[in-house]
Image (cartoon, rainbow, N blue to C red; front, side, top):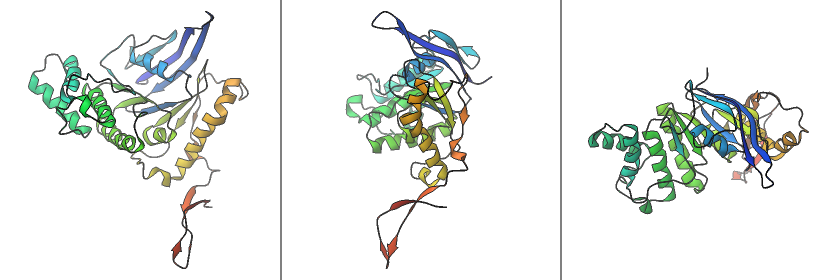
Length: 306
């Protein structure tokens, strides 16, 4: 049995006309221990609703979620959640925000144990020296680091991330992505993450789940990231698999998701297929090439290398 097993999950709401409509339906997938999985799809397809069900913050209309052989029936410290908003308590310092969660997890610990444990995760996210600052004295990126440290500090069996970097500038986003990769590598954390950023998904995820458009959205396919772990933002574009995977994801979001929803893409499979576009043998790598004459370098262009 997989570490996380989702079977036949559906979420139905009452429409403005009183008639029920399904945001997503018959969603089934599994996540193995230590896997990093991203889910990608257009707004309104139910990604956050799925995450809320996994977190125990919402109930599905149908289906079941089983984590570590136990059914998810409500919130639990076994699942750490980081939202796009940092959700810090503004009257508490960095240390005390994290300590609040740690004390909930281990109520019998004394102050020294709590402080040492919190300090470990503060150091891990690169906030050493900011322990006693309150959220008002922190940048947006630093606040998100506190949220990540707080989630990791309770040592959850699974981490749920709802676009945690969506409101950050590109530079800060990249730095925290690198920190997240380091932490996950060190802790072997199981992660389920929502993102709209294709490049972020390729950098972070072992598998990328593609959702069709809502209402009535389903997981259309699961894309295996065949690039080796240890990926870096500066290095992934040198791997020819990167372009094949990226083109596959973008093509789905721009074209195939609409066809899939309309039914023009063929019958819906009972289980989403697992595809490996990075290993396609009919795609040639696209690499940058410098052209120059008489020792002069002209601008970078993109060409196909055969």
